[in-house]
Figure 1 (cartoon, one colour):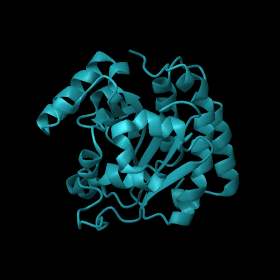
Figure 2 (cartoon, rainbow, N blue to C red):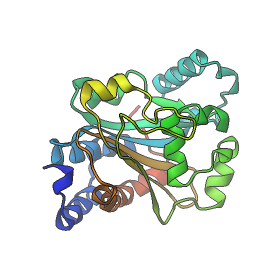
Figure 3 (cartoon, helix red, strand yellow):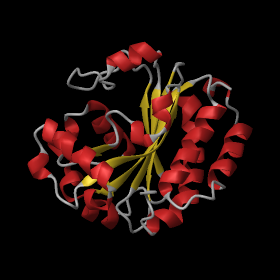
Amino acid sequence: MRLSDVTPSEVNALFREAAAIKGQATVEGMAQNFTELLYKRFEESIVLSRVFATISLGQLPSQDRDFVNRLATSVGVSQQLKDDTTVLSLLGTSGTVPEWNDRHTSASHMGIPLVSGKFVDSIPMVSRLLKEIGVDLEWVEDWKTHIVSKGFLSKSTGMFYVEDARVAEDQNKRKIIASQDFVSLHGVRTVFGFGSGFHSTATLLILITFTRETCAYSTVRPLIKVMEGFKKAVMEHVRNTRFFLQ
């Protein structure tokens, strides 16, 4: 099925399937099941679909911490890393390339440390994503206080949307999807995502999907309901910080 052909009844069916994802001991396992569900249902349209969550550096498995430390060193921000640094961590991934179907073989996106608002603003897609789902970049320096105290997005889901990844630019004239080689090679057109939080936690759950067809905002907006179904499925695991298979 193509995303452009999705119907309200299909959205409702996907919501039920996402909310019923069980049988996994961690958010990582359930996130992988969720991306597989979306990719298989919309394989004609989806190039890559991924689930991330904001998790502190100290809670990450050793492989993930090592990755984040190497990344931070390569971009000159390693001195800003602390155990409580929030990391946008990859939990589930499904797509057209075999390496994209296992988070451990992700070449460069296993985790992005949100060390400061300035650093986040230097990454156009992440900056745009957080802003569009309602996160002020000034909150990054004191993530837990802002996200938890405001009960951020605990009752609603924000949406990120780029109609055409080939041409979309931010206010600084930077391509929002900076990896234009990836866009060109895989025929990426629309990129969309959803972000939602959980009451009394500093965790945001984020879905990002890259498509090979141009999808109108009105086409993908209803899929927020599917994201909310997945959020419902993983809520207990998030509250108990059961994120990784280790």
